Image (cartoon, rainbow, N blue to C red):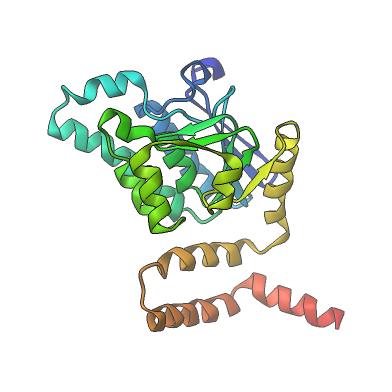
Length: 256
């Protein structure tokens, strides 16, 4: 399959794995092949010990405009089983982003709307151009951004989440950063360089420490304070026993 016909492009450059949604003529709309391709490449990145970070971006002018039009047309006539399978595929993608060991960055140019905004929100970090736009317009067609709701509610306040989910309005990258939906906003003309620089920062920190930190951060969500402290204590002990920690402590002490 040529790159032109492949819905997902993939490359690893040093420590950075890059997954590119490659349906620019469809504004990188989500369909079964694209979702399956992203999942495959995330698994591949997770198995590659040279990879420190994954960057997901979109080919062309937009990150992802949401569900493919043909997929939307099938919803009304699809069986319960078909709709369950379709929803399950996206659910599994969101879970996989949380479960793989390395950080996953969404690099957003243009529009990230509906399921596309959900995909960006599901990533561990979101970087965007100043001209990027975000939103969950599903309610305008009687649909519900149901699965991403669990992620959105953990990123912004309850009232802000309610507004975003029920009005379906778009917002600027600056507004998305202000409310905590995304991490950083960069000038459009500097975006590629800034994303590369940001991703490369993970080369300077311990891969095992980042892996343990990511797992613990999401594990303690919903725990009581005491349970979270105890889980942290367990990870503290595990971290002390890793080669990265032993070597890092030795380097630190040698400088002293």
